[in-house]
Image (cartoon, rainbow, N blue to C red):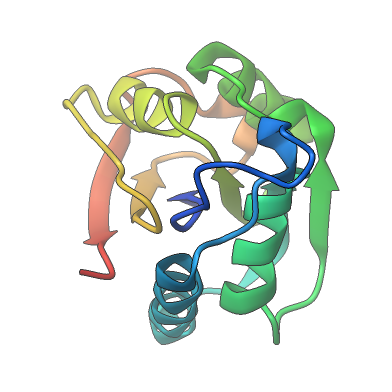
Amino acid sequence: MLLLLVRHANAQAKSNTGKDFDRSLSEKGVMQAIKLGDYISSLNIIMDHFYVSSSKRTRETAEHALNSMANIKYDDSLYLSGSKELLRFINKLETTSNLLVLGHNEGISSLASKLTNQCIVLDTANAILIEFNCDNSNEISAESGKIIDFFSPI
């Protein structure tokens, strides 16, 4: 089983509403997201679902990076979730399909570190592909993943 963890692209410092949840991508972020999309397409990995935080910057990242891919599921619980919540979310999916989870730091980096037992820091629009020796997402656990690939748009 493969898990692609993705951090959203670069966002504007502030939103028009003043809420963090409503921050849009910056021009740099749009370019990062397009490069991210090229990378994801180049992997040629079949993924049935893409799970994305419902914040504006993660939605916009998904729109640019996953625009031709189906089955994007936006989930409020992924907004600023920590590694424990993210792992619980993945386990509860109980899927045998490869997964993509697009979210925020610190949670995404912490989860990557926890799953691989390595210090991982994902910058904006970074992605890490992790392989697990299991057939169901409910079996994914700490220190059970092997890093297959890492992407940075820079």
